[in-house]
Amino acid sequence: MGRRAMIDRRTVLVLSACGAMGHAVGQTMAAASQVPLLSTAAPGTAVAPGWQHQEIPGVAHPNSFAVVEVEQASVLQVRSTGSASTWIARLNVDPVATPYLTWRWRVAHALRKSDIRSRENDDYAARVYVFFDLPVERLSFGDRLRIQTARLMSKTDMPTAALCYVWGNVQEVGESGWNAYTDRLRMIVVDSGNAHAGQWRQVQRHIGQDWAEAFGGPVPRVSGIALGCDTDNTGDNTVAWFGDLAFVAAP
Image (cartoon, rainbow, N blue to C red; front, side, top):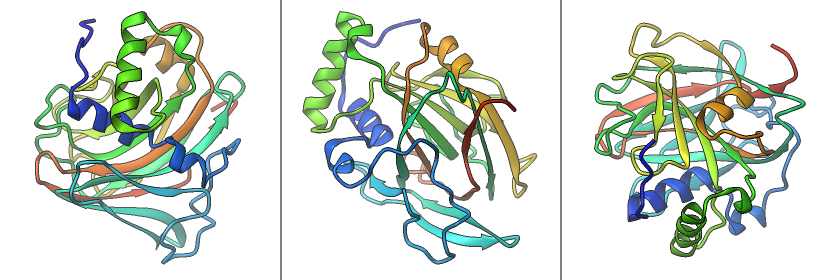
């Protein structure tokens, strides 16, 4: 793969936003051994227990988040109009013991220009980020230097590696690639286009396998997760819904 030798401003924003595990968050949220349930939150709740809204530095307009009732169940609704931000939860999960991440999501429609290989179209109708506690000692000298520089620029303890599962459009289901701004973030398309828009989709991923294909080596502990969608690059709009997520030992 081609390594990106520079840390530009957008790369810092991507890493600091997707991580959102900086010291400010760490001071207010304790790490959990399982993803906090959305289904137990009351409809109308601004932020569900165990979650925190994380705005993205440099992005003028955050998404609108709300717990709503859909089909007699509480789910997270995200409205995005030329905007971007996430809900995050700090975790301490062993992906060797519980290697499968399961969730369900739904979108109003895919974003027409959504493209994992384009900086201008790096927007998605839905995203699930998984962050890893990868020791910096396992990074190359160049990657350590870039991460240290990015942490200084963002003033956060951003993660050293992450997977991002997206509902895309240009790419087909199963395609993956490095984020257009950084190769510390692997993008994986798990739903695409409008064929299933408006429908609940059940997703199951083997985190260890996805990690190995992206970064190689043994999978480190999971340090956090984030949910959202983003339309700040394309100026598009969409609505996404997320049900409960869980790490499980077997499918």
